[in-house]
Length: 602
Image 1 (tube, rainbow, N blue to C red):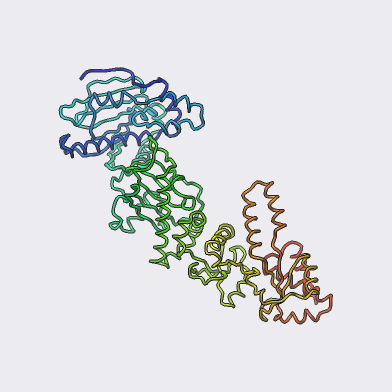
Image 2: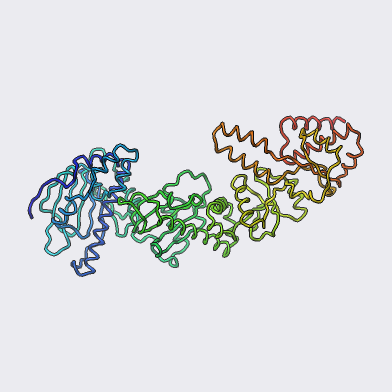
């Protein structure tokens, strides 16, 4: 063949140094690009053979990656379609970077730098120059009568083509690593990159370090491509553990297989781990035709499902040319909606088919299900039949099974045992809620059911039977206001049985819930705003109503006592009521202890 040398058809000699500098933090994707090219070459050859345009072969369709630490070379070899001299000249020497210099000038000074250029132009073969100071190509086309061809370039700007030395159809891309890359790209790192970026590519990929025996580093037939009916639970668990390097088993999984309105295959897992979650990356691995493209799923997965792990293969994703970044468009939104729908369906399915299993995992998924109900109305509709309420004894009931009316609850950190016991004696269940998320969730349930359910804390006015009582007499109310130092304190006389305490304190549910919300929001703002909200919370703090139990034997003693004894008895009973609500603190706690000690001295 004719020996040929020349300059590449680019518009600026400094374009490759600029790309290399901007992309240095992500330079490792060069390996994915070169192996992806090898995959494409094999696919093309198989297609030509199928069409009868290329001769059949008994060559194994595979890719080999070899790192030679003595010659400092990294070679990617394939048994694909190969290239003729004319094809090398067309596809390698003539770089179609239309308007590239304009883009370079546009983004050179910007903070987004390389990402902007990546977003407009694929790296492909020339990503090799991010780690190599010289690149060779040895190729032999599968076409009849083709001659082997060699291509070399030291800087990505000038090239030399000559007769090649490859004797089998396919292509070798040989990277002569630059001094920095020689130190960085060790055998373990190259192997790790192949597993990360190429672990599920559709043809066998072998890695060889120096003279060691080559071994396969990928799985060309990943689990998500197989029919779900042919996969056992053990297979799903093994795939999860191997992919995410964990010994834990997932709570459940969802096998996705969709052909319309977009193509999607994948497996999503809900992990059993309940520790802190600070990293959103590397939880869901995104592929396009088995080629890894991203582990950053912000545009695809809503906040309430960030705990999910898994693999998604979607050839229709609107990837930029470099396959590196997802773009937020209609396809992504449709994909996100589909995933949310499938998760909702799966939860409802598990609850219907195996309610004991669902109850066992509820504490691990409850926050995410409730948050999803708050953020996504369609998801809320999907899971409305499988929302569970946890009773204070640890058992569960479905929200959908509750009778219309009041649903009683306490917070985790505020058990209100005295009030809970009273409700239990009346045959009423009391559920455990979490201060924070559940405050919003309860309000949402009340709104969506149009008042069918009303959540009432165990110490709320609505749970105290105040409608059956009567106003407290003015003398006793005056004493109560004095000892409590609350000029607007209210009181009612109720018959609650002889076992119930003399005094109990209740407050308005809506006012208290609003105050709880203020407390939560105050933690999310700066110090100045916190001070303002703290002052507002004091002003809006719900006032107590004292429920005086006329059935308690002490009530008769109270009504017959002289003024001095009456005030002491009211004071002590009021402290006991504060103690029952876990609100006896500070000076009131000191006074209560002093009064208690005096009782023992009598």
